[in-house]
Length: 114
Picture 1 (cartoon, rainbow, N blue to C red):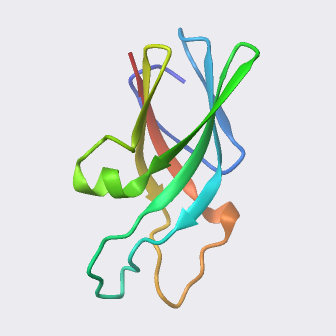
Picture 2 (picture 1 turned 180 degrees about the vertical axis):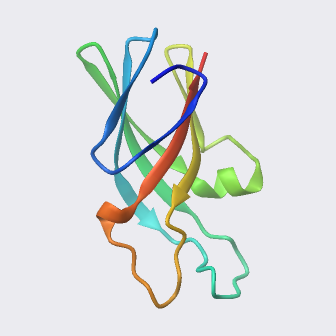
């Protein structure tokens, strides 16, 4: 995957980021409290996307939050790993109150930049 380009992964999938020596894996969603699209909520909620970054033989785990993507505050939606910025751009599908999301249905959109 070229650097500075958005990509989407399913749980368990990984992308090799060209020119960085990094492999970014979407492990799973560890929590999803986002407000369903068909409900009225006081807070937008949050989903936590667990990612693993493999740098040679070393693995580092990070949790990225969708609430920070929605509010435009990248603090917990972004992580720096060895001078490389890894950002969560979005998480699909969006929840509905009458339709549970199966863990395998999630898709995380991310972007890696120098």
